[in-house]
Length: 453
Image (cartoon, rainbow, N blue to C red; front, side, top):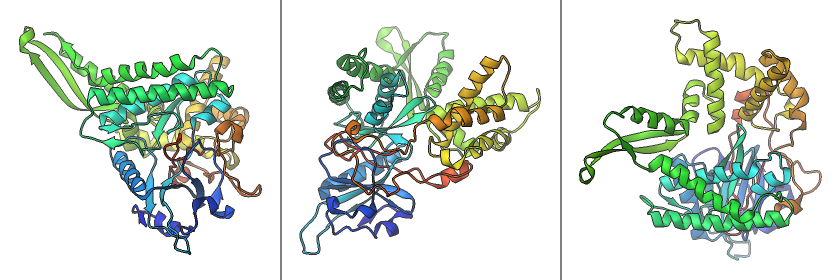
């Protein structure tokens, strides 16, 4: 057994590794929505944490484990690989496939679950924007996916948008850099897979009639190319246009990327024309800034939204011409604004959404209430109204879905009286964070199963 360092291995030793995964006892299993998979996958809960276990060839399991760990170190959003159990045999000595263990990603959903609920009329655009950005981020760190698809991705809500997580690295490889041909090859695969998945949604009645599956799938290439060009293409500079350097950096920061290197090149064959070339080093600009100021670990768009509220709080709380340390302001915002909202959420509603997404929705709700009232509504009043009138009617992120909507073998058969919801968070944000974000794999037939709240 090879497990990553952490609190997991001791608990995982108790699982029945000498039993084929499809025969694991029901009292060990958790039922979660997932996609179609050629591999046997089961979800188990130990010590309040949900794990996904996938039976797979030993070499493939080790390779995928190494790839997921390597990608995680680059900051790319991927599921958390926990370990590989190899050399498994039954009590009679019959060899068994290895098991790849990953953590289940809380508050995330496979794409079919999002379409079955249809909470957002602009779901297709948000889904493809998230997938295109994930593919760009993977290519920037030299990862060739080889099987980009919605099925191999999980999605978490991110301040009204979606954030995509890679959950299947079985067909991928990491290289120093990718050629244009390799990137285009990945895009061709993505377009083909997306078209098939969207056609399947159409046949299931989950896609609006106004959405053309093929044209929508093709649009992911445009989305990808627009972002790739913004992040990597050189920009022509005039003799008196040095201000564009700062403008370019600000634009990249707004997109959520930090700049690691700035280079000015002169083209001697074209009249000495100068070109600005920037090298982005890592996405998550707003997320890292918020973490430094408050300790909150959230999605990128959530961080951008929260930072805007923090800036508004600073403008209202700090007297003009007064120099107050940014960290001090952030501390007061955390204790006076953010934590009271999260602590007001009743325990029975705390699993509806992750804390940062709840806070974003309260801000949105407050804006609508203020517009309707013609005056500024207090945060406390907005929070009470949101808890009474909005949050109770949001679907449980941990709820099970109709198996027919989730694909073949999507929900494991467990007893009716078994608890199948994710562990509840309690009280304030600190309590919610005490339960680590967990990851689990997903698949479209070539890798792990997708699923989870």
